[in-house]
Length: 408
Image (cartoon, rainbow, N blue to C red; front, side, top):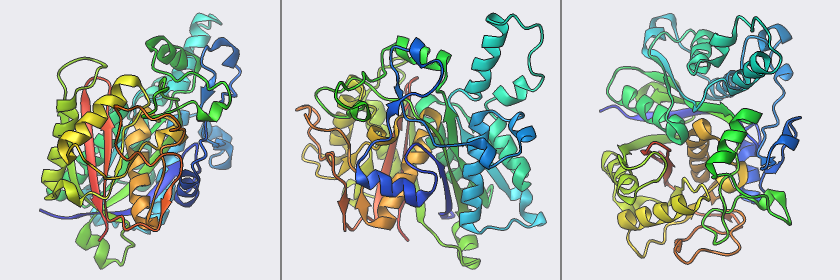
């Protein structure tokens, strides 16, 4: 089997729009959660979110902006970063062996919201003729493919919170099994609209605003946790067959070594210990590693009551009841990016190895006694020998995806 290298990374996120700024802000432990700035905020019960500092006019001409939903805009900018960071060049003869695998939960949510408002509130007789191609979930992947003339597989995975983790995992397998040499992989999401946020509100999984500090509203593994904070952004990596990367002298951030995916087959929203622990074991098995080889786990850590407890129990099953591996939820700071969450959090884990540092679980002031692992509370740790990392993504619908990467 062929080895798979990560040679480029690109980020648009609430915590920064470069990998350096993103990780620097993570280590600081200061969340990007704020009161939402949208004009519809007064109509919400939950008025907090983690918005990306992203102005499309800095990246695209106005005419092009009108053809792209915000999810695609962010994906294209993150992909451009990753492509440039990688320094990769695809020759004409290689285009058919270079692909794009992206994840998104809803697709063009901003366009959907705007169109529905026009149809049902303003009673327009005709909507934007580009509505369909802006809304479709595969728009980000397709535009990336067009931008870089990548003629291999161009696929989109829509698996709720695990979308981009699955996209990266499947891209890893595509290269590992010899069906491609390069894949642009990741995820993108922007659900900060009135209709989307109202839907999440009704489901009862959004965090209550902290009375003292809105930024402290997301509290994974804490006794007083109340749910997650919606975020937005895009995260993209360049995956490349290892020998190809080495032959061109590429900087190799990490090697992807394991991927495990399972289905709970239990409940549309309630997770299971068995499903999550099985995904972790499968990832370890493919990586040919033992539990003690893992130096850091980036948890799914949504700060919902059930997920945090189930994930804690699943980690204990795989790593032992006395597990002392540092585990943190960076969602406490950048929010939950849904379809982009897995990719962003894998990048956070890879950067942990590069910077020899582990980001904290912010806002963990009152630990839940049932969530008793080393959750790196409130303050990041530096000067550590982090060589192997695991990133967990567990989705509504019961889909679980776990990725493992190591330094080379």
